[in-house]
Length: 457
Image 1: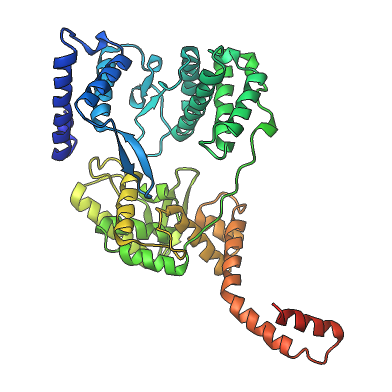
Image 2: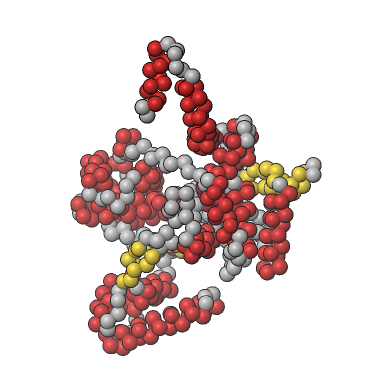
C-alpha cells in the first residue's frame, strides 16, 4: 500500500530496514509470535543492543535547513518504532480518544487545521504520569472543538514540559488534582534556573494555563482555579520588526526566477500581494474578479477574515498563468498552488521552504550583513507594509491592503519606514549641518561652542 504513495528509492530503503529487522527477529525473538507479546520498550532496547553488536550506528548528524547540526535517531531504529505503533493500532479497538496517539481524521469533530501544514496525529506518550495523561486527553478534546490545531499542539508541549519536571522533582504528583500553587511556584523557579532549553516562556505558560483551565472545566478540579498569577507569566518579548532592503530583494529575486516556474511564481506573487504565506498558498481558483475595469483579488486569510483588494494588471496575469499551469497538469482543483502528491491539498509549507532554502544554500545568497538568507516569507509582508507607508497612504488604507482588522499594527510599518528614511537621508543632513556650522564664525558665544563641539566629533 505504501509503495503507491512514495518514491521507488524510499521503498528500497524500507526493504533494507525490513531485512535488518528480520535478521534481528530470527536471532533474538525465536518463538515469539506477535509484537504485542513484549512491551514496546523491551523491543526497542533489545533491537538497539543488537544493532550495536552488528556495528550499526543508532544516531547520525543531520544538518537542518538553516545549517544547524542536530543529532537524529537512525532510520533503522525509527522503522521498528513505526512497526510497533502500526501493530498496536490495528489491534487496538478502543475509541480514538482513549488511545495515546490520536489520528485526527478518526476523531468525530471538525479539526481547525491550517491546510498548508500536514497535521495527522496528536501524541500523548511523553506524559509519563498516567492520570495526568488521561486528564490531558479530556482537556485537549474539549479545546480541539474551538481552537486551531497549532494551539492544541502547543498545549500538549507545555504539559510535556510540566510532566518532565514532575517526574524529576515531584514524583508524588500523579494527577492534576495534586497540582497546587506551591507546586506551580516550584515549577516556575525550575524554568528560570534549571531548564534553559527555551529562553522565553510567555507563550508556553499561557498555553499551560489554558489547558489546565480546560482540565478544570472537564474534571471539576477546584485546585486549578487561580493557579496562575498575572506576574507569573513574563511579558511577551517584542521581536525586531525586520524587512528586506531593496538590494536584498534584488539578490533574492534574481535567483528565485531560476527555480521551477510554479515555485518561482508563488514566491513572486507572495511578495506582490503582501500576504501571509498561508494565505498565498491557499489562494483558490475563484479568487479573482473584475470590478469597474479593475482586477480584484479575494484573500481568504487563515488567521482572520476574508477581504478583497485591487491588484495590478501584471500581477493578475501572473496569477492567471499559475492557474493555467495547475489546470494543465492536475485538472480542476480548488487551489491554485497544489501539493504534487495530493492535488486536493494546497502546496505544503515544508515543500516550498525546502525548495527555496536549497536554492539559497546552493547559491550562497546572503543578506546585507553577510548572513545566509533564511526562508523569510513574513519579511516580504513587512517590506510590503513599509513601502505602503513610504507612499504616504493613510493608516486605514494600509490596514485594508494588508487585511488587518484595525489600524493598530500600522505604527510598526511606519516606524520601520521612518528608520529607513533616516538612514537614507543621513549623508544629506550631515552635509547641510556642516554648511550651517561653517557660517557660525563670529556669532554669539553659544553658537561658537556648537561649532567647536561639532568639529571635535
